Length: 220
Image (spheres, rainbow, N blue to C red):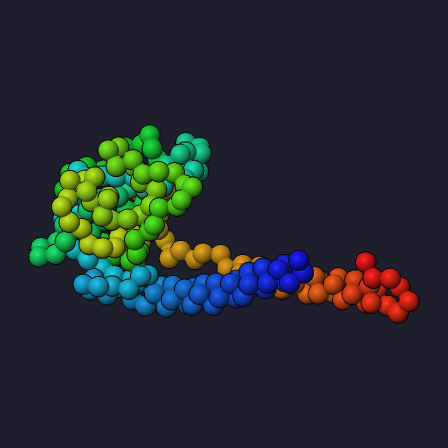
């Protein structure tokens, strides 16, 4: 039993160390992307690259992504992120996450020429026990451009999304992102916890073995 528990806690600690290295490199990648100036959108951009792209923003084609409560001038409001395709000459449309909008508020409409500056997001996988996408209603909880484009009636879309960056103004929607996201990195504390449990298990077993093997004492 001790060997099995030691193997479990040790392997979980090693896994957390691996996750720590992965998350640290991811955060460095995000820092590099945020510090760099926006570049013209390449054909195959790396995630978190800051880019700039021009085209026709189809505000008549809209979908919503996620769910989030924010404070507004009217008080707390339920909202989501507004998605629209940006059509480009000679290239597949790009699904643009334009920012947060209240669910019960007005939304922009029509087609406008626009230049979007933002960062690239790789496709997301649906969360196993999360909310399910509703393509007919154009409500999504995974930022995957292929099904989003299909729900908007587009046959093709770029294999990434573009999250718009800008200055948020109170009462003006959508509210774009103001910085690149930075996920929490708690894996070092998780690794210390698992290795600490493994060390505690060894100490307990050593105490047990010392008592069990003491001369003159019957073994259990």
